Length: 222
Ligand code: VGL
Ligand code: ZN
Image (cartoon, rainbow, N blue to C red; front, side):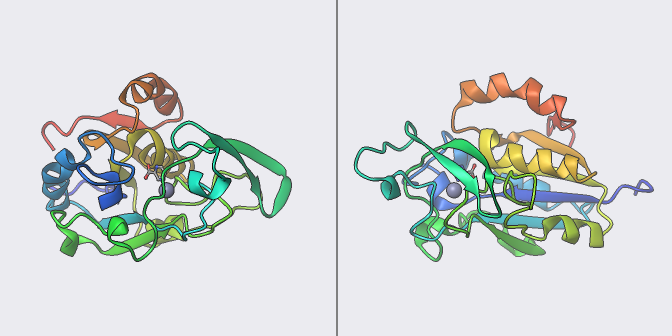
């Protein structure tokens, strides 16, 4: 039975080959194992909107260790990212292996995913100068950088609740859910439908994520 004022969207974040074992360049441990549950969630008739996101980087993207000289080590080295619209705003972030380069096989959605269900696919991380974990925009305060239009899309569909699943829990899933909450939506991460790059780090981040108003829920009784 429809509840009044309940118009949920499912955001399926970055279910791409490069984030999945066995061959992804930034494979998230057991990242492939969540696909059957995501397909089941996608089939729910209760959903108002079903959206996929794709990490979609140019080859010269700032998050690739390979673009920072021979001494930069993926997963280990960091770099400083500056707001192109406000040089006084910057932060330090982790460098990654080359991954999800636009139009390459590694950037494709995994074929087992029931992609025919998606109403829209949002691309993110296209600006070579900035990292973009969230599917909404980069984490700068002002001005906003690389707005994907996702908030406007959700509002235009009168979405009330946003359920976030996919990869990776401790990066793009988390940031997307936090921004959904900050944009005024009830925001959820479905625990069994996500996996972390660093499972231990994710465990220690949960309280902080919940402190931002995101609810981490179980798919039990979906
Ligand atoms: C992601 C690292 C780099 C993610 C994207 O989708 O969580 N993580 N780019
Ligand atoms: Zn990326």
